[in-house]
Length: 84
Image 1 (cartoon, one colour):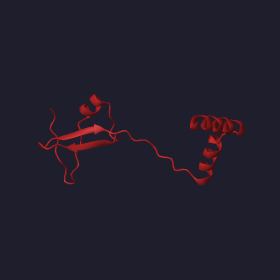
Image 2 (cartoon, rainbow, N blue to C red):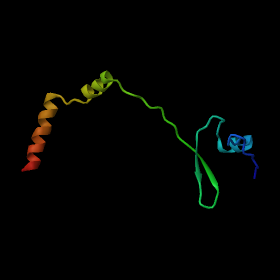
Image 3 (cartoon, rainbow, N blue to C red):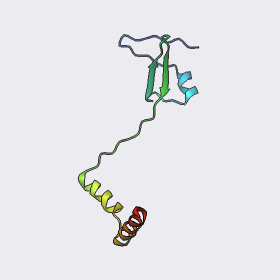
Image 4 (cartoon, rainbow, N blue to C red):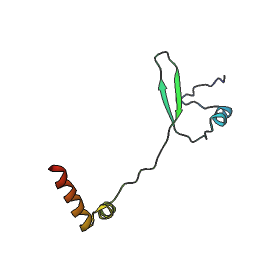
């Protein structure tokens, strides 16, 4: 068990051996949880990039998803059969 010291600004540095054991790098994002008994739990967090779509890009998605005329007819025909 390693001992770490809380810095003046509330920062904690994790020992290099712990980082290596967990396969983490110094810039890793972690989730922290405080338990009712006073323990702290650190878990690696997955961070995914977020893409914001422009109106033009949304239009491209809609056009790519649009049904052809023949597919639209088949869907309408199948829906009519289901309603009977």
